Image 1 (cartoon, protein in one colour):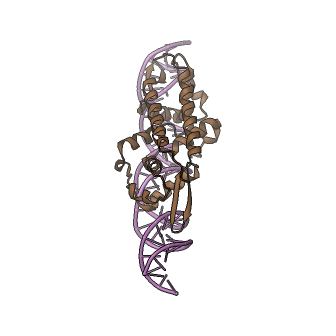
Image 2 (cartoon, protein in one colour; image 1 turned 90 degrees about the vertical axis):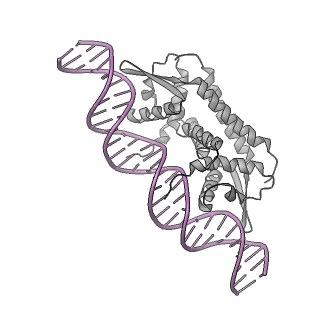
Image 3 (cartoon, chains in turn green, orange, cyan, purple; image 1 turned 45 degrees about the horizontal axis):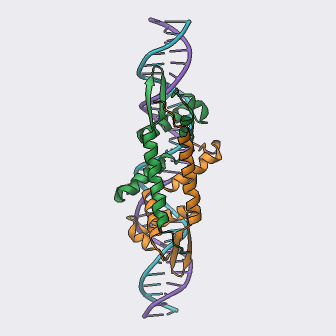
Length: 110
Length: 110
DNA sequence: GTTTATTATCGTAATAATACGATAAAGATA
DNA sequence: TATCTTTATCGTATTATTACGATAATAAAC
């Protein structure tokens, strides 16, 4: 029965929800934190830092990548991931604007 | 097989992911926007504004409520929902801090 | 008291997300 | 070339989320 109805919403609302979904799992939050700490984007130690199987971490990385939040390229047998700071900035701006918009109408009520 | 592993993560990461999950569906984003617009918390017109069945909207409201983002009390046959501004502020602060923390280490890399 | 309007909840179906073992792929190394 | 290391992908199981009809619950209106 549940054909998703997400297409019926405003693009801005859907966009925001997609951004939020990127952070909607602690593994992805942890991955972003971990990546931000590392200077050189020699990665793959990420797997050691996240308490999940390698396949699962790889899956979460793929999700972050498909959202554009991180970029990755293969380097021999290893991979190299790092944060897409531009996209991250966009994302935090959109979230900030969302909250600011809400707060504009912060008049009491209940 | 997938017993959730969320308990293996840091409380801060899990907390952030829960906050993010609240916004991870356009209906919930739209509900928050709609609620913020209304002065009096005479609600229920929310259902008319969201392109989903009444039961589904009620379900999304319940989720927002259980996260503390909105408060609601019954008023006769109607219900009355409004935004919990305190919680919303907490939430936006946590998100802002998360992004700020990431950005501290914004040194180039890729 | 009966009807009406409004909202929550239950049951259930379908889709999405999470998790991992197994395996493939791709270079490095012996 | 054979082996090893590292990572991605496939298949699949399990759980969570989404969605809605039907129905219950509640108080107002008649």
